[in-house]
Length: 314
Length: 314
Image (tube, rainbow over all chains, first blue to last red; front, side, top):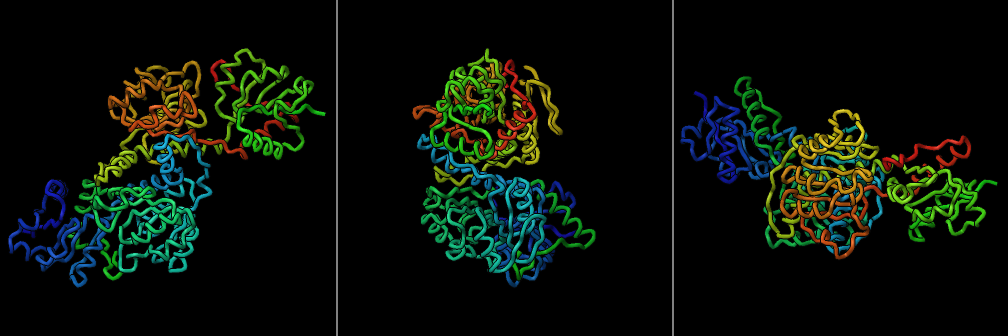
């Protein structure tokens, strides 16, 4: 008999139930169980686990793991808290997630481009005031992070008519997108963009990357979208840039603390659009199909998907 | 010497000045003058006029007009008030206007699709509440009116990932879009659409077309976008549909009376997004280039562009 597969999450019980049901549907030959339902023997045997933003410490109960499959794309918590772990980490790469993210980048770029937040303010004042129209071809959008999500987003923005430039840790080539790397490259992208879209993974190098210095490089009146991780932007520096008018507006889907606490000043800031981490929601069904295929490949062929490079953190 | 060309508008003086300057720049060999600057003899001689939403009665001062070139796309006021006029009416067909409109349709469809108005309400309540994500491929958008603007919009919506259907007076063929005509066709489109986008010209047939009966055919919880003319929708019927929850949200860029009066209930309606007629703003520079080319063709070759069919009204 093959080892049971522990499912380790901090999701609420209802959501955990849906995950377990859907995983079992696509892996009918496997026993997939919440960690606390495994016997001590089963914990010793487990070679693979499926995880959804787990408490990293919980994984220490599984000493013989070869790998864990995250159903999330972001795995910074696992990487940071388990720097000496001996197992490999696989994160979710889901084309549906990429589509949802690229669509969100397109949607909220158009939201900024077409002054929707300004018109909402004018509506609250019952003020009829057309604002000058700027064609998309006169706007430059800078995408920070050019992995699967960044690439799909850049391509959508191009198709929408914007000029697109990009920045990433390693050099990336995307048709019709001028791409940059390094500190100087970041400065160029920040200085040239009307809208900066942050899709960077959270690593030791990107934590607080967009702080006072970086935000001051941006064009006066530029806008920023953060769909990556809250800690990539220094919240204090962002508030300063918005309050001084250096930046016009920020669309934030991610925050240092989530859910964003009721008392947090971002909720009521006139130049911040707060979203509850919805830019690319996991589609449980498609995520489980991908996880199932990866686990079948491991069982049958002993093949692992691309694993996270824990040194760089993604 | 050729006849002076009267410019007849009700624009404010500053905007009228910009129109005259830009037209003169692209038609350096013509004398383009505001109507009240023409002598009686020049009024008699004028065979062509350029108009920007003019008082139709003012044109009666130009008895020998062969045609007028509107710098607006909508010409319903001219057609309705001058049913017995002897001159032809040419309306602006500007690819830049089509692009701006198609972009607006895309932008506000994504605004509805991605629940931006709901998230704005939640932000005002400091409530962290992710809403279920529906992929664009599971949404159907119905475009009413498939002229230049409707076609460009339908193609943008397709490229964004939505299912698109359409309705028009005359049968139109658009790749990947199922199109309908007639009363039954309208019913089909209204019943099948999650979002209805109105791009119909205002004519005697379309005035009040979207009234109590039509709106009641729409799917419960559907949304509507009106970027055409206010009078195509019965405002009372729309309010009723929104208040009863039959419709979820309306994005309105056009109104029976513009600017929308300060006291109008739409300004404060929680389920109406009010825009100040900005979905496709005229680009004066590109409009003047198009008008100039049409007038040159007329002077040199005696060619007129497509004229408005005053019976159907567009």
